[in-house]
Image 1 (cartoon, rainbow, N blue to C red):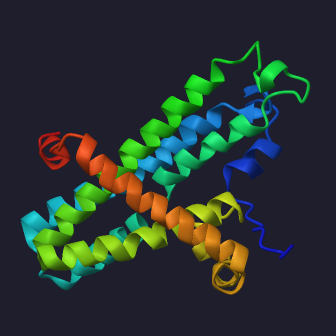
Image 2: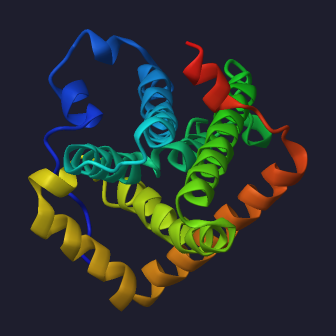
Image 3: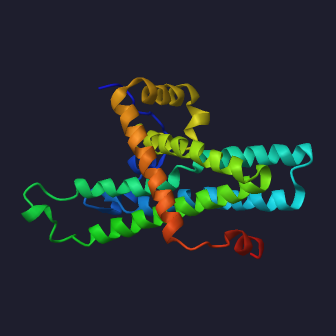
Length: 230
């Protein structure tokens, strides 16, 4: 197996290793506080996108200082985008939370965790969809409808790659600044290794599918109006 695993010392896992208190909140070897941390990270890009849209509406990013600020916030938004669909991937914990000898592979004492992870993943899907919806609205205002559609199709594979870098390699959004060489090396594995590339491809296809199903099912929420009138 390729050595693709990250070595971040600035993530939640590292905090858990050094905190007896936080390790007390565990059910079936799953850190329950991880749910709240991951949801916090998932909402960050939505908030940043709303701020960018507000700034564009007010200033048009005409001054150099405004452009610089927009670039900084834009890059931060881009790095945090994968955190919402990453929440969906956390449902994997259902695969190993039951003892091997469980009847019909169902944990009698904690069967309720199935509904917990389902709801948790559903929230991740909702946030993921609305982040892309807000992204599309901003791009349409800045460069037009057609380019917005192109940007949407280009960004989903990048989001998918970000999810896999967190899922397999255990990198965090901010690790690109702390371990740039190591993160880039991990990215190259997804191009050169067939198994990782197939995972990336299939994951990207499902993220496309989740977005377009969300577009059909979910109502259009004016997050910008809510944000502007905060």
